[in-house]
Image (cartoon, rainbow, N blue to C red; front, side):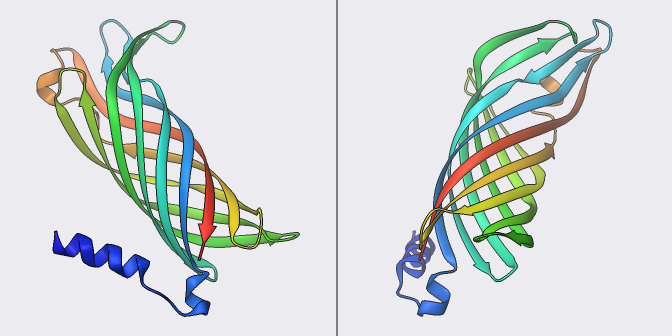
Length: 196
């Protein structure tokens, strides 16, 4: 409990003006789609989560071209079986809790402050099935972000990411003939950031 309190106090503590403008908080909304996780080789079916609308929150610090961020995301996804031409989805099969740590590098600035940044970092995803089972997977994300100023201390940031982690299934979850595979994800998210 004390480390959490110390962290919150550190975030809320007054900071020098030069440093204060480099911190930001940002609620976000996004869409993520998944592929992979398992393959039934006999039936020719791909099995795994489908897509989800995510809600999230981020805390970031930027110092010139370099930046770091911590992001929290939540979403609900269906379980799909796809043959390529046809996909059958059981809706609301999974809840996803995602925490990612991101390092970023400024690539270019355009016009009145619009910036393009490269982002990458590790992620921990906790999948909770309808039956209550939890699966925790370590993965990695990478992508681009476009930051567009909205005012003196606010901006909109559009993130486009690709990520990969271990299969959402354990070996005991799949029958013989079904091969577990890495779970790939593609996501787009919009953040409204407030700096101080």
